[in-house]
Amino acid sequence: MNRFYSTPRSEVKRKSKDRFFSVVCILIAGLVVLTLLTLLGSIGATGSSWLNWDFLFAEHREDNPEQSGIGQAIFGSVVLCGLCAALALPIGVGTAILLEEFQPRNRVLRWLHWLVQLNINNLAGVPSIVYGILGVTAFVYMFNWFPSITPNDPPSWEIGATHIYQVKTLGGQYVKFVCPDKNESALRVTEPIEAFDDAGNTFMINVVQSRGDAPGDPVLKNRTVLNGKLTSRYSEKTWYHLHLPFGKTVLSSGLTLALVILPIIIIASQEAIRSVPDSLREAALGMGATRWEAVRNVVLPAATPGFMTGAILAMSRAVGEAAPVLAVMGGVMGTTNGLTNLMDKSPVLPVLIYKWAGDENAGFENLSAAAIIVLLLMLLVMNSFAVWLRNRYEKKLA
Image (tube, rainbow, N blue to C red):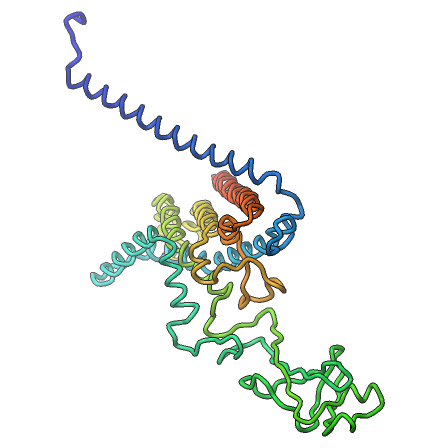
């Protein structure tokens, strides 16, 4: 009977289309892999010879690629991502719990719930440069609610900063005293005033009318200034220095990156919560637990692997973002004193790679390739840690 059986023409045509589509998919996947391997090979050949310990810990040197490095950029990226995680993770996980476990029953609230969910899904696909523009408006200038910060004048509101006047004495040394009014950029000394030196010793500044009236004792001469001597001002800032508006600082960049990864964290956390079987919730509620007790003691521990995986993958995107940081903080390549507080600027790896790649000096192009290798290794470590962490918690929960 089989010799009289023939495969229908429609089935043959369908199988031929399946084979053709499979071949096309394999070719496209092979082309993508080949392109990726070519790029990795080119980057490795260009930058591997520049990788050394000095490169990892040195700072950017203008027109000197041989002595330049990514030490400040690595530290800036770590601080920026840590700040981003501290801001985005609690909000993202909390929002996911609210959307999944505490869905409203009221018609109006259900409509608002649907609207919020829709916007979260849409925001996950918004280009990062759009978040950069939003960060400039919301965090750098704070919608112009506060006076803008000018280079020579202090902000209208700040904490953790002390404004100091310094004046040169007749002995050639500089003495300091606390600025009575931070809005005065310079002051003329016309009367004795209490001052201090670098060692913290306090004394009174003497004022004379001419150099001929200066005392002969060198110690007293270093505590004497001419009448009307003009002072200069500088600021001593603590690690918790903060001002409004935030300006083009690390804090503004961290807040902007938090907005970039927030939809990703929310969606990943929602998927982790949905993966928890309903039978666990029903068992907890059946034993007399409240809704929050069931979420806290049953759902959250079971969804922890998904939370951590989503968080690390989101941070992997944040560490490689350049457009929002360029828009908010600018193309910072190096700082004199390093990063001392969140109101400072700092170079980060993606921005440094972007600036080096466009430099006219061929040596910096090689450095950009070496920095790309370091960034790829960081991403590989973060993604591998996410996989290991997920498997470990899944085994522990099982």
